[in-house]
Amino acid sequence: MKMYSKASDIAVGVVGYGGAFNMGKGHLAQMAQAGMTPKAVTEIDPERLTVAEADFPGIETYGSVDDMLEKSDVQLIAIITPHNTHADIAIKCLKAGRHVVCEKPLAITTEECDAMIAAAKAAGVVLSTYHNRHWDGCILRAVEQIKEKKVIGDIIRIEAHMGNHGKPRDWWRTSKEISGGILYDWGVHLLEYSLQLLDGDIVEISGFAKKGYWGPQTQWGAGANEDEGFAVVRLSNGQWLNLTISTIDSKGKEGQLEITGTTGTYVFDGGNWTLYSHADDVKTVASGKNPPSEGWKYYQNIADHLCGDEELIITPEWSRRPIHILDLACKSADENRALKAIYR
Image 1 (cartoon, rainbow, N blue to C red):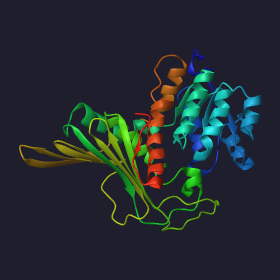
Image 2: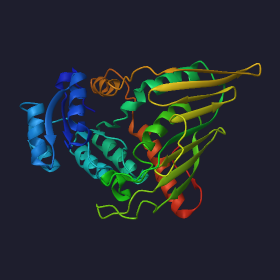
Image 3: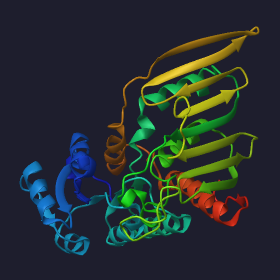
Image 4: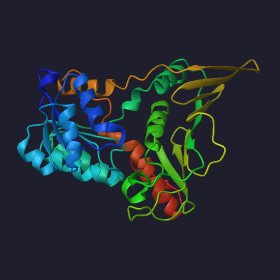
């Protein structure tokens, strides 16, 4: 793999500069913050290319990935497109010898992840997923308190959940064919949080789904996401993990992650944490605010890795773990049976 003498030698670009969340601008700004040099934008909407030129004067703009790969010497490309396009675009860029960062999820299926990893290895380039939430304050504090300080004893289970009752917006993220399903958007974040806390190997996944309440179709001409998705992950050390994402949950649950241990339960969401603990048969409750996110460390690690200074933290193999869970959960729900994991 080519190493760079300094971060500013790394020319970076994005594929996708759509208006939703202004993510293209955000990625390039964070790359620049890490010392890398914004170079190119690829986007199929000419109006968004005009926006990119205003945001980054002098930046190269392209209407297709092929055009960018042929004409630009951009070396690191962030892919910010619908989930079902990640694998094809990434493999094309990897085979062209470019380093690639994919927005999460890395891909939809395990097979897609495998093909991407193989292409990166064959080309001798870096592949990673934009898991900037790996450095969210909520999980940084949880790892410190639970893994290092053992405030809840030994972990027994994690329940990860998000839910409300309301018809989802009709766009590509609510198309199962395009997005992967209801578990893929926020579910990949909650799984990545959880896997930082759990120690066992993934052994088996069971998936369950409720479909059709909000309608079978989206305007995109594809089947709608599930109304609710549920996955159970069995680990080799006896721990287990539940994931629930719902649009038909009228009650909701406290927090986003509830981690139960032998001496307490720790609950957190993005902003707050609560610790329920027992000592000498006395229950105590403490709560507080989570520290701020350190998500900037994602691209700093990418830059430092490409300059040969640090190990890559979000490896493609790490990124594949939540996708493998989601992929098997969807297949399990369709087949009405538990499925054994290939990747641990």
